[in-house]
Image 1 (cartoon, one colour):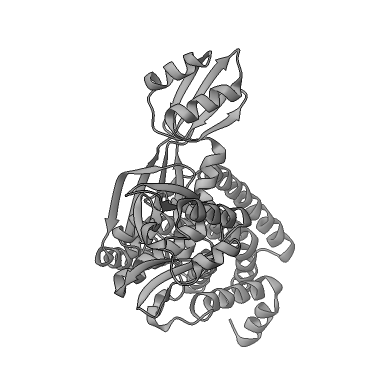
Image 2: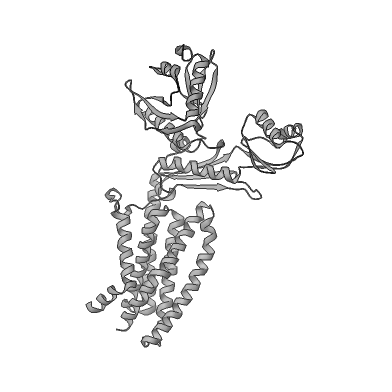
Length: 485
């Protein structure tokens, strides 16, 4: 093509749109913001397979019970709460969520005592609790700076309720993963009464705001937080009734995170005097000195900000991918992608024996991949499944470009403009039907929480849509200009 033809093509809105999207994608990957330390990777987010990291699978310590009763549901729930010392939530008129791992045999006497019977018993949590768990875990993960950690609820075959949650954290070591998402994160304040006995004051749900870890004059790290009005009043009453206000040294204030004491000391400074005159909303929890104290303070801050999970969880499976192995996977994937593009170019050249056809095909395919990566950079991490989706997009994209090229050629020559447009429209119709089939087939996988398949489905759907809406129309314009020469 001569310069005049190229200028005409660039002015066409279809070709201009492709060029604009390619430039925008490259800017998003490399310049927004610039990340020279990562080289060719730019701002692409890599998943557990390609970056290394950890995964945890946790089981909800909860059961869902279907019941029938002729008595009071309120009395049944109260008897369960008292007998099991746990929280009981009514899901609907016939189901209860008991937030404790308890067997059916242990439940039956309590139900019988309340004039009720168990109709069905399943391990797991209600959909409302499951959504709350995902929300809290997302907040905790966001505190780690993770953009797209994978959190998937798993429901065993034959069950109606999620029983497990699996979370994948790229670039996070196993110890950090277990500290942040592998525990319930239940924060409690207690006050020492007599001897070593303590009395409950409040839970973390009474906290309204949390500060950043700071070091005091003694070099101890701590996290400041504020209480609700009800929490501040409860704290004041407990401090006065226990004697902590009048005799602080004999009545420590104890702060507990997941049954582990993170702070235990008398009320310090002028806090006792302030409590005598009224409620105090601002408190601080000290975690220790040095790097260990700072790490504990950061963990405590995350739990206080995100809140505790509504149910306890128990780690039933875990694993990690070393960073070195992730880098090896990354190199292998890059070579596989490059080899796929080269193979496509060779096959297309063997078919047409015309470089002026091969180069636009490969360039269109490459532009499609760049645009796809530019979009994926904001919405999904790249792992082995999504890379497989990218390679699948390369293959299906070339198939569609071959369909367009073969359809518009007439006995090896370019037809008249009217006939060209008819053939081109027919080719696009074939491609559109094929694309719709792919989207319909992939849509269920994209909507389901299947960590190994969801990324593949999303990338495939995006690639198909970019092709049918953006790159195929541009290629049709380009190939017409080339073949007419």
